[in-house]
Image 1 (cartoon, rainbow, N blue to C red):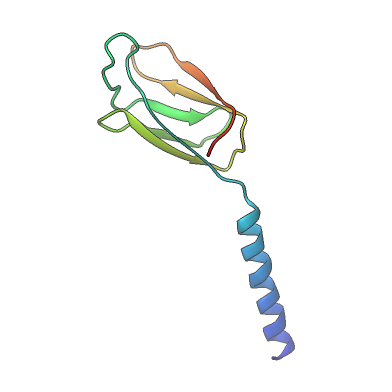
Image 2: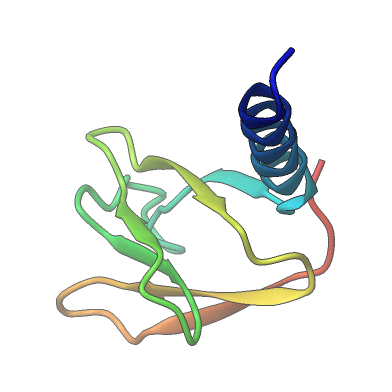
Length: 92
């Protein structure tokens, strides 16, 4: 292998290693009205202090991937409801 090939290979290996070192958490759940248990379609779910977020689907379910390692706080908001903050201590 030429010196240039060795450098390119090393660069690719460093990039791959960096990608593997980035922590990623995944949080899934369902947003429902506490009284009626109806799904809150379109509720906003985000990680507090970041721009990372998602929206609940038609069944109220959501799946949020974040590079934030636990513990972190989820902020859930929906028109006509008080914003809720949920502490996430660990993910699987």
